[in-house]
Length: 222
Image (tube, rainbow, N blue to C red):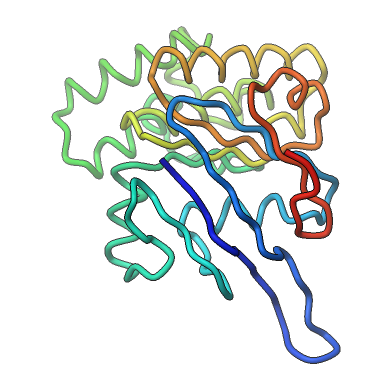
């Protein structure tokens, strides 16, 4: 489904050059949960941003369903992200001017889906992630764990083929982290979605069916 060949990313030049990713080769299969483990600064977030097309590699290639995406124009990348990718950011990136329900409906609105369909889908997802009854609240009125659940619901609203999650349990306690990962597993199974989770949480890594370990921008174990 998704693979990389010699993927590298550097920032700066000369003595200030920083290698964020170094010759990363990955093969991600459909309907799988892949955990990308590593400490802060290991390149996890950089990898997710490259896989999603939010950043460009310095060298190497990325293929999605056999099509090279690393050299796509921004217009084609934008269309691909909108139609096929979902992203859960570490800080959620919810819009506080909108209600919880409206946040989940937002990506479907960009797709031009009818209002009734958007609402039904958003309400269904919020029920599944345990936020039923809080649809009219603003994100700032929710706990960190609840905001993360809303972010996941929004990420899968358009039924993307691939969901990328950056440190989804970084701001959660152990109980909420476990609940969140159970939810992610259910989403992978129920929605048929492929999910890549960047994390430094060993519990997530141990439970994931597939995993890779990053250190200083290189895969050291898989």
